[in-house]
Length: 161
View 1 (tube, rainbow, N blue to C red):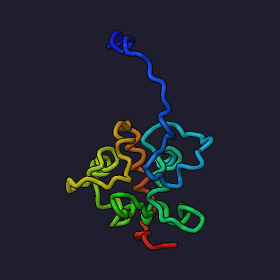
View 2: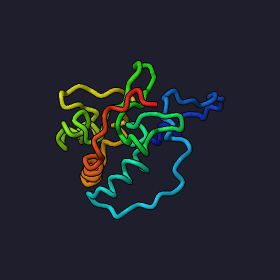
View 3: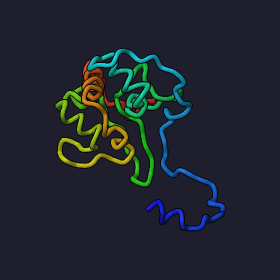
């Protein structure tokens, strides 16, 4: 294949301006400049680090207030609205409340994070970047789940401002 490609004459053209049509949540800007990582392991501390600084679970699964995601008072209580070609989707509650992770097994939560599959087999909506998390280490998933399960149960945060 390389030999074939080397025989094709180069083309000079202006491909135009690059653009991205995928809406990203505000948590992706500005980027995290530094974060001290706790020791790796299936611990609450490491799970908090992954869900916060690294994977941005907290920002997307917390309601949006006037100053940004309400992570101080409503961490992962849902309420973040995503608008796109799929319509409007509100991120689900991931606190330890009955309408949060409490009703799911660890395996259910792992499938949602890594495969985008709900326990009933339905696909999750496009804003959930499960493909980005598909290769998460088992230990990392266990840490994130341990962190989510120890959060206080909060009612669904949709509509809070």
